[in-house]
Length: 191
Image 1 (cartoon, rainbow, N blue to C red):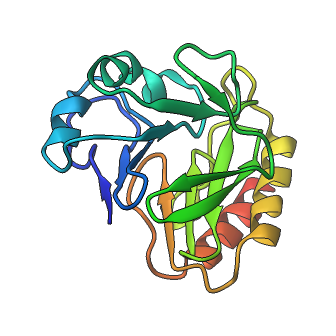
Image 2 (image 1 turned 45 degrees about the horizontal axis):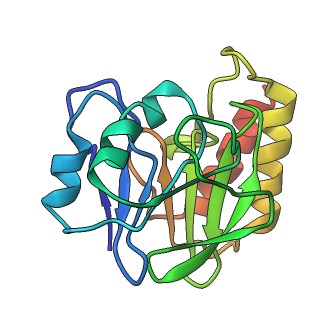
């Protein structure tokens, strides 16, 4: 099961995905809401947090999660506060019942990762691309439009055209033609 714990929150936060299974995981921890209470309304324990990147709205709740659970925090930037394990490009991490490959996708932020499971046909896209074919901001520190375009192209090359689900850092998940949504974002980012 994949549940967005930040859905319908009236807060400045990223989406926060709880993935249950053999290794119960949280993809990003969000900001400005009681994520621990939200987690505990679904599961008793948590095994790992995987961060798509370290922008404030994706990581501000990390301290409260670490206070409540004994777990690993995995991210591209191993020097970031609270991170216990580095996840490099091409390395894998178990999320729920599936292995996800980390795709280093800078352009929005230097430490940005997308997480893709070929077996599950699921992509966690972070702030690279969004529903409707939009794409991540490049006007913040570490943002770079040409690099973002290259990262979107990399994801298009890596994921299967029959991708079943794409879960994004903000807005709704995409469960209808997510590959086409990534293609639209790629085209839009070039203009």
